[in-house]
Image (tube, rainbow, N blue to C red):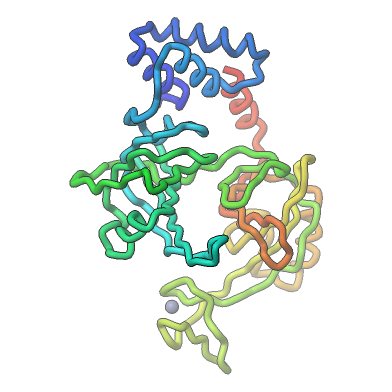
Length: 316
Ligand SMILES: [Zn+2]
């Protein structure tokens, strides 16, 4: 069995403090009990570490070991996603730049946010590209992201990390607590469903195509035999709040809709109301309506056996 986040932290504390693992765990449990269980095991572990005089600052940690609130984070990972640099206006009216990338190691992956011009210039000059391995020195954790400032550093390493964990980490979350930019897993009921809409994409690049007469034109690939895609907008509610969500193609089908039977879609979508699913997706801001929206990436049926397994895992 792979070690959990918690087990890794216990092991690290044990090593750094020369204390038996079982003793470290006892201290963590005692700390939690004193705080009436109001704190997570990982949170209690951080307090115990501090009390034992251990500082995670500048320790080389695996991505899975990074915890919210950590400062002076040092971590090594392979760049698996590099997003276009974005510009914004600073309060003074200057132009600022920010860049996001995702790095991965064998244990997990995490988003890195670059704010400093010297770091961003590494992307502009083409030195940082997907597939390269980097070391981050002196980053700090903000929620579940590592943020780099002018005090941080990026070093390119001449190594390759094999078998990196590239699957997205979806955080189990309640709708009322969801924040922009997060990847979340929610269990919710469908309380509204809108008409299924169809659009056409280029088979080469997946981008939307424009219909001109009987032809479909891709900006990059010209006249293409376009593929039809379905999308549906939903409102999801888990009792703590509601959120608008959009599902595409495979996920429309996972809801149980037969998109080939277009004439019956109105009836089919009515039947979705009151149904419960587990939704995985990323949270975006809908600027037009000034609210949050979930871009559904995957849908699972609610499986009671799995729910019980998960509950038991959280108990332990
Ligand atoms: Zn194309």
